[in-house]
Length: 140
Image (cartoon, rainbow, N blue to C red; front, side, top):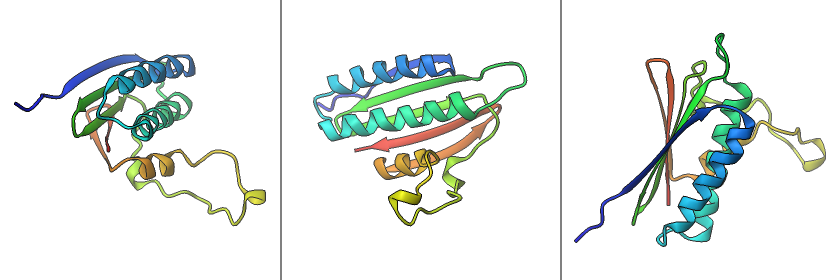
């Protein structure tokens, strides 16, 4: 008999303090899934941290800090991560980095999060649903 996916959800105000707490929650859940390798657990943690940090640092609302929702769907085949925020519309799948570093000495700090998420996930998609940015990642 095939085991059904297990889903975990959390919604918080997008702040760096909450990012730290949610990332620890994600890591704990990912480590409990015996089907995930240590590399896959790391990919989940890094991707969630990058996406949540982007929301906390860059998503703005005239009425205060945006909210962010994280949904993890765990199965024997891997994990689907959904990160949704009600900040300004931003489609990371259309984001093109403004610079390409020639070497480490000339590299700029920051601006690589979306590239890292793309690299560490099997797929990445974006949709805007009402006032919410919705990012979906498949990992493993």
